Image 1 (cartoon, one colour):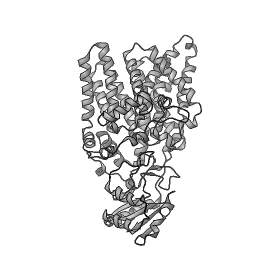
Image 2 (cartoon, rainbow, N blue to C red):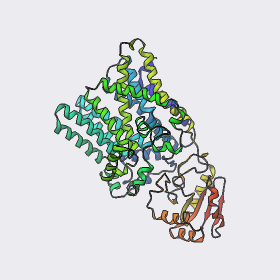
Image 3 (cartoon, rainbow, N blue to C red):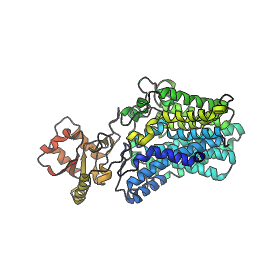
Image 4 (cartoon, one colour):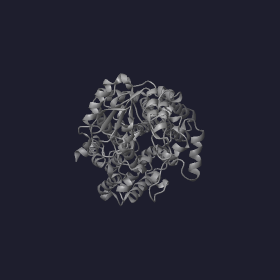
Length: 540
């Protein structure tokens, strides 16, 4: 039992219980985390890679990519737990039984929740990492208010900048968090000028640490800027926060669900597998409300509660009533806010609020007169609630995080493509940005062809999500889609247009769409130069 006193060992053990199946040979394939086994330093761009992303990309070059993936995922989950503990520790500095249960509650809840689960199940590592750094930003910002130590303020600045390093629109999350925290301090201490200065410094350092990618975004020197310019109302509808069966969007967002990926059936849904999720959430939410109410005189508690409420409103997006009107106004008139087309990302701040306020609620509950005698049992019951709220995280997300290597014929084809480098670019079909490449047993991921075969590859950039077909303005895509999705039968004119844009080969991945591309064998000027178990390679 003495090891339970060291929270680092506890969270190391919990992280291992979640991710131990990933430590096998092979790569982890996700929808939004591309497997790039042949990454080089030349792939790190000044305009597209922030300082933090450049460091991670350098590690992915130095380490075997499979090891980098698993190590990065492990450290993320581990430090989410540590961060939750540290957040609760700010409000609960003592080392008592009830205090430790409360801290464990916060740490475990930062790991076991629908928001983190959904984002990691889809491979949105940057989103989860951004929320992790905002958590540490809040921790050090509050520590600075309590201690006035400059090192805490500089740490807050660093973590604010790192949050935006990994998800550019987290600048809105940082701005709101800083505004709420410093506003409550300003009004309680009547120190307005001082807190305006702190807010300004935080935002200055955040922009400074991301100046290259922000400039690249504004002047469209990176893919994020080029893509974002095509965002419109269709994208807001496609990526909006959603409901679940009989559950309204409001309860879905309040319970940390609503991520658009949940309705795409690409990973195991916590709501479909956990038939008691509603009563479990209501018990957790009761702890949150109890924590906020019982400590309502504490200005930092009020600030955390206000941050949670605002993030809930913003996280609903363009769904229903006054909330829709307000959020639509932000999209229409706030510069660059349209880039935040997924409002459910705001729910990451609500998660942080729940972790802190729930910890306060649990501590207060365990100290009630009628609870003290059986405090250990009630404390364990509260932790059990958190575990069963998102049970889909255990054992590698119930086997969803299973390492797989590329088939041998992919490696053989890579050598052939390298030998034909002077023959032109390689068009990869099926023309989909997201697909099962044929060896993942139906699992849909970001098309791995370009990352595997090299920069000569041209592959689909059509996301085909709900009301939004594409976000691309690439000229080559327009030429290819004119033929693939046109009304006329594909003929030799297609190959002529491919030659005009420098394409010398066509690589067909053998997946469930294979029959849709039988017309390739009917084009007389195409030469089949390889036909293996998973691939076909044609020369123009």
